[in-house]
Length: 360
Image 1 (cartoon, rainbow, N blue to C red):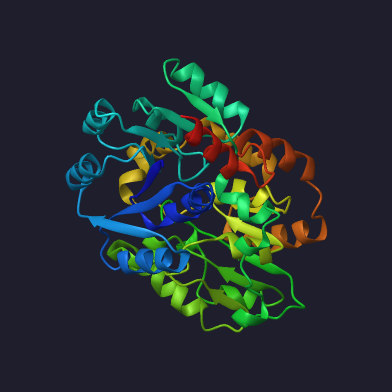
Image 2 (cartoon, helix red, strand yellow):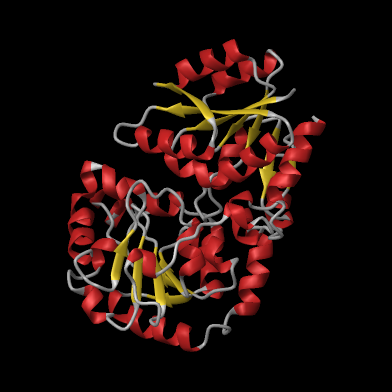
């Protein structure tokens, strides 16, 4: 029996890993998870895995993780980011290392992490596969699609949530906007305290990155989120709600910055408004602006075709209204870019990954 361990550095890796883990388990593999200790977050990760029916262990750092794997000797370890170079010692022991990037956004790290000599990297679409092969001709890449989206396209409806607008206290007769801001660079602090009142004709599901809830440096973001939560047309996804997928299913439109979630939502052929304005730390301003450029990749250019661009908070309302009145306006672009950035959306990405692992 093949044994597979998923390396969970952060809670937000779970939506990408879980569809594959279930598929491997169904195929007869021994599947478990290794969690890296995160203050305040680890109990949420444990609860999620308990509910999903998986076993797990916990480590405090990379050194403990490497020792754990050396002792357990699994057939495969699946990572959501590149580990320390010392993990190549596990390959010398016959353990195979796979990589499923936890997002498909425009950050440069999407590509550079393939410097690590994984036995295979599972890639989302032939366009990105070709680029990675040009950058790293000695690495192995397999185009499988983006497994995180499988529950939204799968025929197995048991994987999907039963969440409804009524169950989260929103009005089912109103259009629903999903605001999914990231923690940095973020648009959150650019909006006013009474923003939901300005957008009262819409439901707002707001699902921040969990760093916005947990990191001390983002206290101002939390203050705004708390203020917005008092409005009847707003639902704030709590920190223990680790997956955006159920909210994506409910929403008519997404509002976000240049993040992976934009490509994920566009794959559902729904419109996106790009918040192209940010609250940036001083260390990324002025003479240090080049640091922001280093964080992002040339894929950022795709947002101009994929989204309606709002260059300031004042433009957001009109852009939202336009998109909801013209939901098919960028449909052709969405389908083209989805094929390039997410690959196949047939609900079978996890099956392709499972088939590869079983055959190797």
